[in-house]
Length: 408
Figure 1 (cartoon, rainbow, N blue to C red):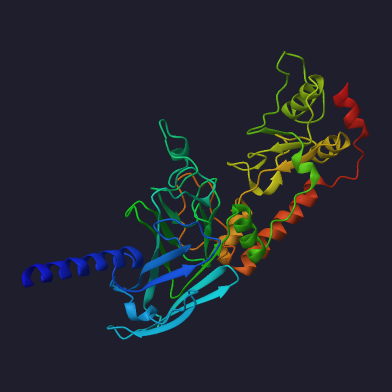
Figure 2 (tube, rainbow, N blue to C red):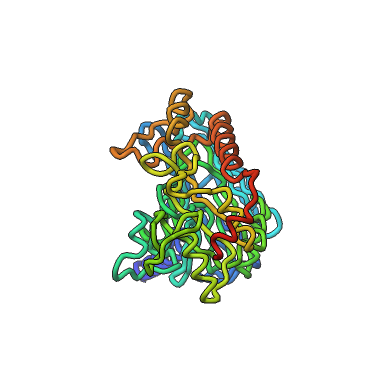
């Protein structure tokens, strides 16, 4: 009988431990529960809460240290707290959580911090939770991966890992994502990072970022639009574009100045033949056009982008052409890239205005990139672009004759 009672007690203790592990997280160490009425009740949490655990930091020598459970022992029921712990390697680690309305600000720091290279934590993930954000792509990686044959991934990031670092793609990356549970995460960092959406562990979203400190904002709201709005108002709302942006655009990748139009009619107009043909054909078919976009190459040099100078052979009478388009209510837009070419490149390299550590590709394309973190490099690039842009569209001559010539 005593043996049976002892077994029952052990089973009860084991069951209690299993339930506690489910609530406080599988990983040992610091665990924090944030409560908000805006959260969706999932993962067995009817009190509308969100579990954070798996806190760690990493040093230059590659050692990773889990933050101790005692660090979060004094957390308030709301989730607010300020904890401090002395680590075995000599660091004093601080974890601070502030609540502002329905949102939370999580900060991690250490003294000293000169040898700390990375921080990380985990956020619990429900089995049916949906994630979106971070990038203007379907999947992370090479650009072509987003339209690979047989691709099953869509806007849901679950099961994906996304690196947060500037890449040579058509996508803009931002450390901000939304969850279907009614929360959003914004990592306030310019350091490289990584998000793992239940890929390594189906029960966790893992967030890791380089840097000596770590700061993360967690917004909670049942309406996804409120989550997006809250972050936008904090970092700066987007600037509403002018109305002309919404008009139909005409884009052409490369412009060749030809002697005849598509049907063999000789070109007698004063501008690039393909520009004239595009506009007049759209007009003849009754297709409205509000913006004409000229892609590279439009300048001189091997890649058609030297010194922001218009190539008069490719785009003859360019200032008058811009005026001709304006007379029909059409804006002219030029492709532009964040790098120097031509004599600008020589001067930029001599003055150290290029992006450090960038290696020149064999063909020299897209090189050297501008180091926009350098105020002098940024000013040099802006002045060159602005002065040449004004020169390209400024013309004392009237466009009346040119308009008549093309319309004839």
